Amino acid sequence: MTITNNIGWKFDNSYESLPELFFSKIEPNPVEAPKLVVLNETVASELGLRAEALQDGVGLSILAGNTVPEGGSGIAQAYAGHQFGNFTMLGDGRALLVGEQITPSGKRFDIQLKGSGRTPYSRGGDGRATLGPMLREYIISEAMHGLGIPTTRSLAVVKTGEEVLREGLLPGAVMTRVASSHLRFGTFQFAAQWGDLEKLHALADYAMKRHFPELDPGDYLGFFRKVMEQQAELIAKWQLVGFIHGVMNTDNMTISGETIDYGPCAFMDVYDPATVFSSIDVQGRYSYENQPRIGGWNLARFAEALLPLFDQEQKRAVELVQEELYKFSDLYKGYWLAGMRAKLGLFGEESGDEVLVQGLLDVMKESKADFTNTFRELTLSELDLAERPAFLEWHSLWQERLGRQSASAEEVRELMQKNNPGVIARNHRVETALEAAVEHGNYGVMENLVRILRDPYAYSEEQEDYCVAPGASVTAGYRTYCGT
Image (cartoon, rainbow, N blue to C red; front, side, top):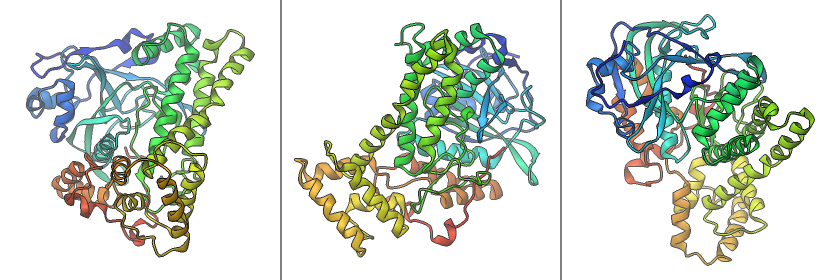
């Protein structure tokens, strides 16, 4: 069913130019009584949509998955992935790609409904989502955007008026996710496993044209290099703010370099490199300290899928891509160390900078210091660790390093403030907001939190309460879940 377009949709459906192996056409799975609970008007404006036209009637029907917008389509994408190291066939089991919106500035974004019902890839699931996890993704993705970290975003969350059976009966919801694309490492793994060389070529050519048009046609090694560089920078940005993704499966790593899938993710409070929040990550595969290593492992799996494109002779293809993969560790460290220098107000580079950074992290770990607030306090010269001899020794070395550069104290502070968020989406704040919304229908707590998180470097008086770290009793044993 198509509609008369008075909302601002300007759709293209380029993904459907690929072989049908990569997707399945899907009809809408209507819900009973949709009700809009979140509309991200900033995102709507950036997409070229009329926010007021999305709040009821046909606009609301589209966001609920009851109606296909004019010019849109309805497909579920096929992909595969290594989930906790185990390869499996996957796909959009509860999501519907309704089209690619072309914005007034000419940019292209996937518009996907998450929780929209069963697809051929549902693997026995009901294809629905519950309200709490959809609101959680809205909160965290807005926080990530505010931090300047590439991310998918949420246009809207709609309650369906239906209950979904999980650990009990929970309110159902559909979230509208906006992404540069939903092309994943796992999309290429799927092509390599179940397609042929022609289909793998088609997918790679499509991805290159969409995301890296500056590359020469057929430069597949350059394509891999671009993706690797983006992943190195993305994971470094996660580490610099204490973000733990929680489920770095290859199907959750995007070709665009955006953070995707906010199920078991969380921000670290007390600095401990071994921190894990995901309830199912019992061995710590996706712990904070392992994220860079897993990033490299995932890239190796991506490279394996692309091997036939690098060279007809497999041995030569392996040699070519291994030469690139060996660069990942240094790429990541370069981005991470540059970010850490900025967090400490360091201009230029000195050979001892990495040792200086690690020295602070060691003191933080030993002292069980709060990750975000330690850097915030250094920025404000409010030193809670000042009583500890190890910190005083480190602080002296830091001051010596600052003294060897020409930057003024004000320039140092400005650099630090731009790179040390005063607020993050602290877990206890997120949980409080979700409880108010899901249990009591009070969305004000959540919207206030999101408003604060959208400007994390403001260091405003209004943000002071949100900077307070939770007590040990609050953080102990905190677990997150792969929400459905």
